[in-house]
Length: 147
Length: 234
Image 1 (cartoon, one colour):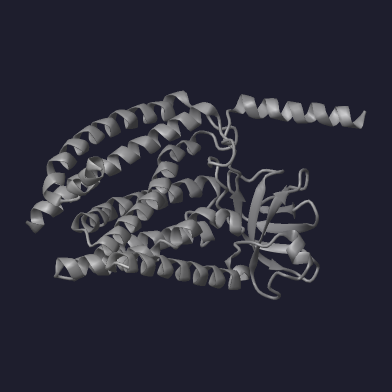
Image 2 (cartoon, chains in turn orange, yellow):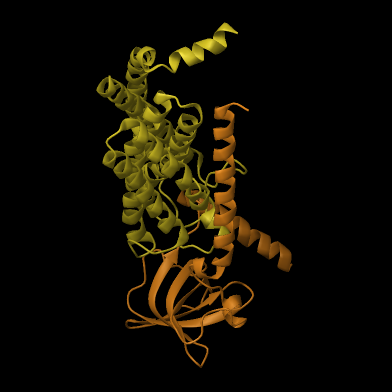
């Protein structure tokens, strides 16, 4: 084995060891690395109790109610739904049926009191007419299914 | 066999010097043309986004810069590893020359991302996995440059920096896969090698043109910097 072969082996081994160590650390901290909890995780008591955390999911269509600066809406991951109340301005991209992340705490009544609401948009980019066409197609499919 | 030997011939800094100059000139020209085309497509041809309106157009800078920031780090770490393994001076010089450009693109990605986040998410910054790991990437670049600058002896400086560059490479897959592994505020990838892109064709064209322009720009400035380092060390 030439010296340079030894050095290549040492570098490869070092990188592999470091990679495994990092993977183990990240797995161990898995729970602390999530930015938000889903309503299902909250229902399963996986979210931290008695301190602030973030919940994330879709805003239920038709759930948004405004009275002055107070807003209320529901967040769902299609399995579970959590009602949220918030006082303040919502981000521009906040839409019913779209993603949202809210930071706050869960009350004993099961209502999430948000102190900050962020919009989470998806990775799809398309012109408005294409979005409109998609919507129409979805509606058409729904009417076919209900018939 | 003679072609194989030619490669090592180019590994000598003295023979590489004029070649680097020629490649740098052509790449700089290509980068300028492609950037002009990319920005034109991005700002005038690509349609308005259905959800975000015009604000999404920052994607034409943000995404190519973020790609380059990660890719350049891997290239830098690879040159550093080659330099450590084969004791070639030019490899270390390449690693040293890439770092400032990588740091620049990392900063651009963070900066444009922050400006994009305010009107869409409603915040300039959150500590989610994607944003945090990209910030760590910036610190790795800066740390690499600071470490090399603080050691007087070039050979020791090269080796110390190389080690840091290789160790830091574990961060790159974390940045790339962070949006898949954990819940993040940052959305997933619109463009990947494994599936069809989830964006309109004109938008994709603009983004790829900009990515190519950034590639050529990176090659050009890296080679110019390598020439400076070669001349400095003579």
